[in-house]
Length: 612
Image (cartoon, rainbow, N blue to C red; front, side):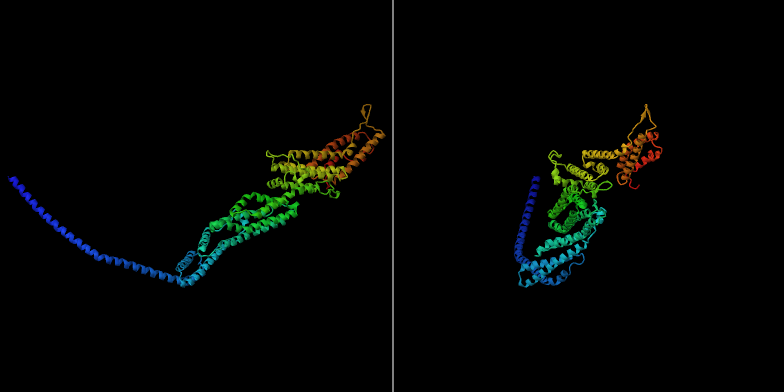
């Protein structure tokens, strides 16, 4: 019962607290409703004010912008007066950025005023255009000035001789020039001005190339005209160095153009820049070639030298023409004219040998080596200095076309029916030597003495044979050497035959009596021995005297010929002398025995010695 009372009391307490809580909740809800009403009324009051504030703020911003725009536009009207002096004076030193900034301001002013279409701005726009044009001209002048300062002529030979590269324009100046050229290329059209800065580049750099190469161009002519030798010697003309300088400077120039000019201008500007120097180069080449035409015998080797120089450097020329965007036709004409002269020289030289005058007055009195032989062999030797040029030219001419009447259709060819260059060169050399041999044979017939004929041909054929063995084995077939070796032997034998009359006086006659050698001769026998000694002395003296006027300049040949004479004469004379010194053919034998063996041999050893 007591427990029930306690629970009832707790329940009553909880109910009372619940009622209090509900009352508080009602009061709080009432207060929140009041707050909501107040907030609604507050919002209704503040929102119009906020909107008015925003409108006023935008209005203020617009007023500020309008004021600033008006100030800016007014400033554009005054810009001409402020920037004109700066632009007309041009950049100060290398301070290009501030000058370009000034140009940018004028350009922007012209764009803004032009967009407004105000009558009052038309005059200002016209003035701005004039200022901007003046600015472009100033930049072009600056481009010319900076480029000219870096384009002083050089002496390329000093770099070539030291194997140094041709200098271009240093990095820093190149960057400044590149900035200028790029600005002129891009901004000029935007301003309605077409800049010709690339023409400035072409003008300045082409003059630089021409002046730098002038001395070598002049040296190419002077070294050909004032050489110390009558016949052109390989490498003595300045054209080779001139060619190297042209190529090196052209390649360097392309590098300069790439660094300075916008890419779309490089190829055409490079082509026009090198054109004057290339034309001068071609003109020098043609001048030298024309000189060769007038002096074919002495100067044709200059043409071969030039051809070989150009052919070995053709790859670089082709690269330059590719960089320039086209091949130069004048250069092609130079190559064609050089080849034409070279082709012409081969049949002309053969014809000169064939038509060389055969006159007694033109023959050497001492039967020495003929000038025609010497010049012909010298010509062939010089041709071997230019194997590539000679072979290519002969192939162009065609095998045997230098001597159409004797062309060999069966001359050796490769598997494709083509004639190798070295084979056609061998053929030409063989034809030249054959023609020379025929000319020498014809000339030799005009000598009245057989000895002179033999010595003349022996001298000349031995000279040819020795030249073949020492200089031409690589450009002649072995059959050619064998042929001239046989000819030397033939005419050596012919020369030995001219001594037979003298030798015949020493023919051995033996008188015997009862099977024993007779030491006492009869009068007829004694007279015969006397006549033989007398005739031998006379003929030998005449031969020796004649030989003082004969020449055999080659010591090897001279020794060989004398050895052959001595090998026959001395043994025969010794036998004859020993035999008849015992026969008492004369009371005064010294009257007939003029020479002892040693004296005779000494005299024979001095044959062909004109100094005695």
